[in-house]
Length: 256
Length: 382
Ligand SMILES: Nc1ncnc2c1ncn2[C@@H]1O[C@H](COP(=O)(O)OP(=O)(O)OP(=O)(O)O)[C@@H](O)[C@H]1O
Ligand SMILES: [Mg+2]
Image (cartoon, rainbow over all chains, first blue to last red; front, side, top):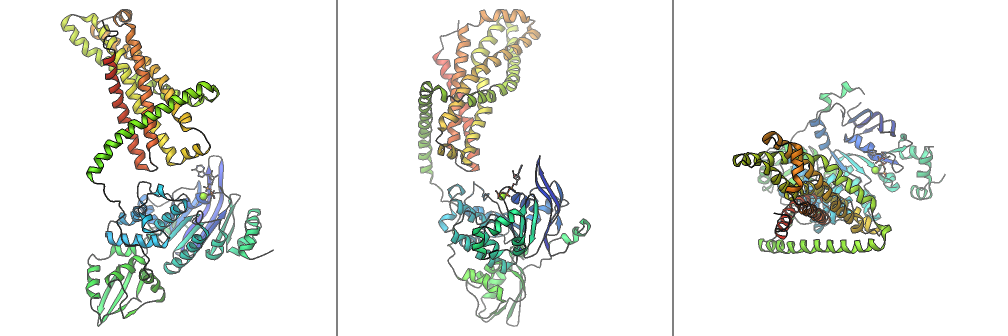
């Protein structure tokens, strides 16, 4: 494994009781790539992402994150590794007892070395970045709309300017304008900071505009892993339906 | 790709040089990692030195040697420059955008994330009003319950039998162990202490009266109710609360299902049924404990003990005990549901209201016990 590999999975199997979710998945993702993971609902995309972060241990197989084996890392190492990752969970996972502002400031305050002014400025900048205003900052998570939860969670994932960003369906629940803005924002940040992104998405626009690498999960396996063109050329029925539906052809501008 | 290759040395954090700058003949050369991780490792006086250097207007700033510049690092520099770019500065192309984000404005003003504190007078008023609103809400709950019962009397098919029986099992059946243990021990202790006193007066036989009266009339119902309030009351509150947090209550309402009929009524009915039964059980076990202790301490036979019991304790006491238990059950369930419904969708409120529910229902149980003692002071006592 080279130093440039941010994520490396080898022969990963996942089983929940009788339910086999992943069968022999191997992949590796280089630094600076943007990986889009697509797959049917319930096929194990979220579980795959959790395994990459080490929140869940695969039944079988090995996962390396930022060059370190998650199976061998002790709790402290894992903690350090995760500090370099930003995660946007599918449901937002905002702390319900903290306001939006405090939610986003939370990771910064945990560092215990930054002064409050710097924290406030950074939080406000991230809020502006994701399109939340200053009145929104004082709301509690329960008082937010679904899309606002997404945006606040995104701001929290971005606040540490992480090396690896894990996004579970970042644009679902956003209106199309915001979704497009998000794609633009992520592209810009990616150019500036050169981070690596793993993104679960069903959004073809995001896939075609942003992702340098597309993984298609179907039938418990990785049926395609490579460029978008590889995924489009994939013969698996799910990939065919996904990339060659009417909507897909309209967006991808291809017909075959 | 072998595990041995990814061992400690390759896995260490990439070498990090803290953010620094050096001023040499009119140029400030900035270098190092100007990102969050770097700033944490920065020397404590960095920002102060930066500010001092930034006050020199003629100084040229050279940022081309910076390894990484993120918006936190850019902000520290930009703030030192007085929130503008210095006139003479050399930047790499991609660094400009990090500053542009601070330059363009549109960033909401710095505001503390906390809500303003509530003045003390308003808090006192709120507390008093809160008490009133609690009373009103419990009353409304009770009223709704009566309406629901009337509805069920007319539509017996709507009676939520499954929920009721499940709650009886949960609150009654599964509490048998703990009530038996506590009841037995209390029986033993009360019996032991009383027999020491009775021995000095030579009035050993009265142990049956003392135990029978105190356990059947007071201790049995009180013990069972307090245990149930702690055990089932808290779980009822938390359950309803989590349903609020996960929007299950909204889902129920959207389906047109009455939450009072499906959630609250079964709990209340179940506790009103289960608590008296639990009291019978607690009484029996506590008396057995008392009998054991009396046998050991005063050499009163078991047969004699239980034969004397009906004569020593008028049956009215047993009825009062059971009646109290039913009222306790009603209020424990009502209070639990009341606090459950008050939970706001966040974790803190969940914890607070669950605590409140237990504290209030135990207090209320003792209060009701006192009321019963006053109301029935002439009944069942010879
Ligand atoms: N903790 C768990 N215990 C048991 N089974 C689980 C658990 N988590 C996930 N699963 C199962 O694993 C499968 C994949 O779940 P996952 O959440 O990864 O789906 P997904 O691909 O993210 O779907 P979606 O697009 O709907 O979010 C599902 O069949 C689910 O039932
Ligand atoms: Mg998912």
